[in-house]
Length: 561
Image (cartoon, rainbow, N blue to C red):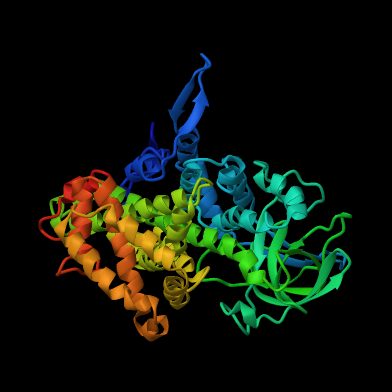
């Protein structure tokens, strides 16, 4: 062996590494993401206000730039790798035989989630509300989820739980200040300054049909005692959980803490951790309740209504998480193609590869745009029309964007060739990760049927959605024709939704594409909006990547990637 200033070099010529890209580390993932930077301000209407040394107010994005540097660092990427290589371990008993029901995470996971909490990726939009607050929080969430998606589950649920907990003033007074805290303490101890909240709703006999739940709740003074089995309990080391259970009034919603007010452990019997296809760094468990203490949220028998606010918020985060994954896929694929040569040219300059990469970037940009539009609709200044819009648009977008995630990840993985299929690179992890966003908080059929139900029972949501599309009228003839036909198609659904169940997916797909196109026509450069409209709405439309028409400005699209 010989050595040089760059480190050891093998004396064997076959060991010299040629035509491989350098590591993509120590980049600012926020500043590198042009669509996120732009749409944060234009669509999300977000600005951070900071105080300068002179005492004046300045607008910018200092916290997001700081997060971009953190998640783009070599250390954060190594922590993400370690968190997935060392999945959580269940310990039901201590070495002395006491029941402890704890999940052990690798230290890298705790470092990651602590940084996300410190940045406010969980509840900053609630703690500091206002115009654009949800877009700022969405951007934080997306940056962390782009590199390490598993921790995003408890981060998302903690954000979403606020709306439900706020329904119960006594519980809100105790729990919301802890949820708003930027301090992360992993241990289950009383009087923690911060807290994370998970959920345990579904059961093996019902799944998405939560009204089939059989967990029972019996009144016991100021609280209830719950007995039952939950098939999926997300992030079981959270400090509390929202749980659905039946009592004499019907299905109710209850807050179940891991540690009781007197400092004792609540009964929370972890049966096993799920062996998941992806989302490996995050624990999902089966849990038994046996006279487990829970405090009611909302009115008796109205548990679904009490938890629906949480469902809407987590559906939004499914969109954001998918968009974050798309961004990772595009960033890794474009980086590889810009540094790899084949057949006499850089990969990115080979026409077939250029088309694929531009198409992937186009999909990621459209997902980012619509995610930030939805985030803006969740701000506390949302009026009646805006709330109606988000009711329909969130479900529509959750269906389509999350459906696009897995194939997007696969296509990006293929851009790296054999390296893409190797676990040393992040895209194999991403390919396994994307399907959970489509499954969590409503599979495709559940979401599509929910859209039909909303169209029939909440007609104001359709009117608000159509009004949003109308803002882009006249911007492109293909869009105008598509939107006009769509309006005719949805008209009869509003009166007899049950007759269209078999076509629900087709309807939702078109609604989602129309919404994405309307936003790109209003806020994106022509290179992006024209290519999206023609390829997704034109007569020759196809959803296989790498099929953008010859008229598309591929260089203009890739310049933003």
